[in-house]
Image (tube, rainbow, N blue to C red; front, side, top):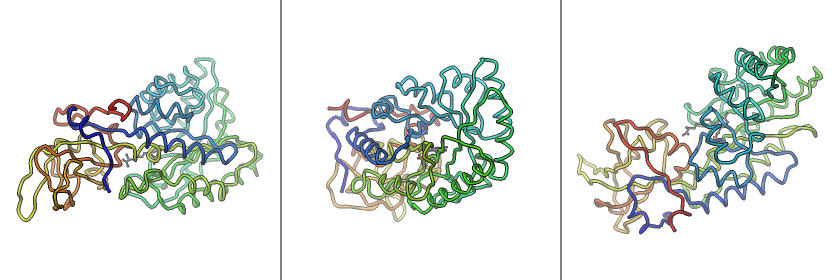
Length: 386
Ligand code: LLP
């Protein structure tokens, strides 16, 4: 089954471009709201890194989610879209001084701190402004998620977070500093996780660490378990909305949240992944040796995930019903890795056909580059194209 698209409108636009189906986005947000509201004290933030298109951000902001930012630029984009600073968290292993100062000036909810030197600098910069910054420590729980090696983040070998062994030491330091307030722990084990068992392992780790804190009579009010819920790249229509029910249920069943605690989530891909497609035009169909190539005007500069992570995106010829043939679908960039898919079955392709690369709403437009002096792709919502 192919997606439904406003083909006539598409014909008027310069390709390649991103297309966001706002109905899918709004339905996804409604589902998140309903499922999270079943539990007391669940607070969901949107991971801005997945897609910072202003129109997409503003729809997400309307739904009431907070924002998870990893740079000063993302803080600015979130503020511009109307996210309240009081619902904003700021993570990242390498926060520059100006980015910390920006967070302090806006009065964001919390800095997710990843090292002792960073903690000391936040304390210093906050002192200079006469402020006290809320901080949570990102603990590396040494949990391997069943996902691509490039997008696991919770293993001891990764650069992220503070090791479990160092947790006590870091907390001791924080308690001596006057311009930071230690309010919680933060975790994130990886992305595109579909096996709820991975989240169960994280919950068990968090429970152990909470017991340790309690033994020391340290009370924290916030636990942030990051994001990571995956989407069904194989079937963007059949399962347009990820399984938020099981996701939140897993945390409710396995994480021993204290009555006075809030549980925070930072979801990116699961919020925006399925609403977006990269729309591209076929430039040429070329016969190769024992194969044929569909050469698109979109390349790895527009959607880098297949080249970078060998990621699968469903490819559809949305302007043809001709008998299916197999094609290697490639872009125009001067790199052999500029391939979207090999031996892909598509309805017979001819020059000028429109091709949709599905499930591209997350880590698509935002990761586009200007390599080969190419222009960045535009993003359009379905609201604009009616
Ligand atoms: N929180 C933290 C601390 C993160 O590092 C990330 C993603 C998220 C939340 C959101 O994760 P999500 O819910 O989207 O899985 N570019 C890669 C994905 C990189 C993910 C980086 N961190 C891709 O295209 O697959």
